[in-house]
Length: 192
Image (cartoon, rainbow, N blue to C red; front, side):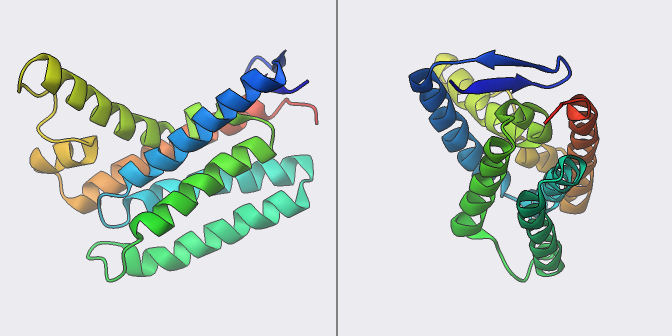
């Protein structure tokens, strides 16, 4: 029966296959769409995803998962090379094809490492971006036209507050890096 690894607590919760499959479908579709929502500024989803891929490189190295480490390292290389052309002012855009692939790759690695719950930490920016969108839409409908944010997703809210694209990307990438480091600390004691 499949297990759900819980970071920091170093325990696994057993689930039935049907429940695990429903959970997996929800997490994969959610991650793919969340990364797509994050791709709204020059270099944002690219920059935010580099620490995520580096987290998986570190985890693969730590546990000796050569093939997974190679895929994660190739993703880091691809993202860094792409960022040269995608950073503000962008000459090349990721588009849905790139962001949906990136979301699938992140979700796929989390499941390949058998720790999908780690997405709560490494994907914190993706989650905040998606939640800001959901909160804005629900509140707009319930309040008959009022808004929580100046614009959603939240990177556009900060843009409307006067932040430059470069500042938003820098701050969001720093938050992503911090949470990826925290995630690495949370799984270091896991026995493979």
